[in-house]
Amino acid sequence: MDLTRRSFLIGTAGLPLASRRTGDPFTLGVASGDPTADGIVLWTRLAPRPLADGGHGGMPDRDVGVEWQLAEDERFTRVVRSGTATARPSWAHSVHVEPSGLRPGREYFYRFRTGGHLSPTGRTRTAPAPGTAPDLAFGVVSCSNYEQGYFTAYRRLAEQQPDLVLHLGDYIYEYAPGGYKNSAGTIVRSHTEHRCQTLAEFRLRHAQYKTDPDLRALHALAPWIAVNDDHEIENNWAGVHPGTSGRPDFAQRKRAGYRAYYEHLPLRRSALPRGSGMRLYRRLAWGDLTTFHVLDTRQFRDDQPCDDGVRADCAARLATGRVLVGAAQRAWLAAGLRASRARWNMLAQQIFMAQHDYHLGPGKEVLLDTWDGYTAERDRVLGDVVASGARNPVVLTGDIHCHYASDLLADFDDPDSRRIGVELVTTSVTSDGDGYDAPAARAVELAENPHIAYADQRRGFIAARLTPTELRADFHTLPYVTKRNAPSTVTASFTVTDGAHHLSRSAVPASRAPQAAAAGAPRHP
Ligand SMILES: [Fe+2]
Image 1 (cartoon, rainbow, N blue to C red):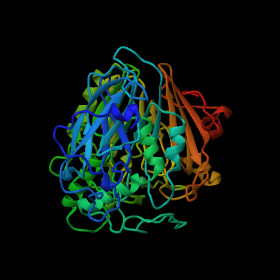
Image 2 (cartoon, rainbow, N blue to C red):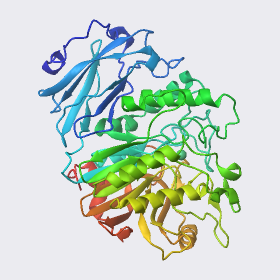
Image 3 (cartoon, helix red, strand yellow):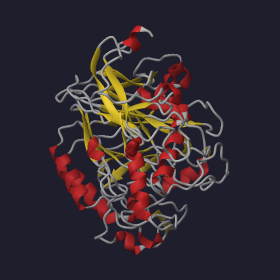
Image 4 (cartoon, helix red, strand yellow):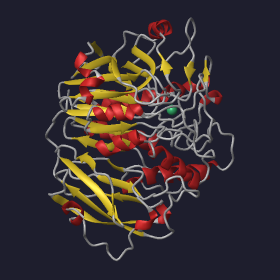
């Protein structure tokens, strides 16, 4: 046993540890999340056999003690916090630790230990202190379907060394094997056996996703702010209304999906599922540089109008009483925006906010699961944003499996109307497979939606860099995800200048090529 391992021999509060005989219980890796200026959430889940029947990960049906350490250095010579957590079978032997009293704006390292097994080391970071505004490098990802590709985009984002990662939903997909195919129909690896309905099935699915080494690498590299969309439970569900599965027992499915989501993400105790719900809208400050207002656009919404889908005529989508975020969340958001002293105000949410005409040619067709299906709510929320006087609103979005960059307009039917802020939409990590770039169709789409400046139907992520004077967003794309190890390249870059409320296209610098990152580029290239 080396020194660092020996330094871990701290009290276990009389709890039995995982047995050596069960094998390495840390197959699902480690994660951290929801950083504040003085604290962080540290996560792991014990699962020596992640795909064991029953969703228990190969763990015995009893409590197990798990030691944890948080240190200032990667060798754990300066341990600043440590303790023992209890991994309970009722929570799938997941561990969520919330050390507090940490120093602001600082890198930390953490690890877990039980039964002679040491976890991988995770790197994390606290938010900077109020009153300060150091630069922030962050990534934005969404929509990672295990069957449709390899999670290389997570690896390529990790190589960009972000301080923080935002995952905006569809972290898992609930379908049965082969239940969701893109047009090419390529499936590179199969989902666990059943469409997710029971807690055991959701646990198994989450565990399967974490068998992907690129996903584990991105979790171990930086803290995440994660929020679900629909597929953590089922396609296009809305509030109390089930989605498109056509199955009974939606409330039970929702309870199971939320519980498994909590068990597998580095979320705070404030997010502990209650009944069939979960409090995921929340606010995280990054010093005075930015505040992330994380929205939940799924749990409190009215049903999609006109039976959902992409439609040309649906008067119900304009009905004033229909809600998307709901009254309580809307009031919470408005109050937070009014009180915000942040230079940038990020609305981290799931679905496309700008108006988006999908029909190429005369006439308009909109996707009713997005804010276009809830136009009065969009007007109210954007009205709240303007009325609050919050500085530099930026909406961050996932869901749509396509990169977009857009201005947000006071009136989307008047291209010359007031710019309220910008929307940056990240494409999927894998969902819909390899994807393609279709310049001719894209040119028509952009011409008919003049507030949208950019679209790309390949897979990838956004790597952004924020300073007090500028937001820069690099849109990375991968040429394929159905084979391993795709490179990523920046296919478009946009900046927003403090006070401008609109996008500016900027040159894509050669230094952002993936080779530079792999060779050990500076922390903020
Ligand atoms: Fe998705």
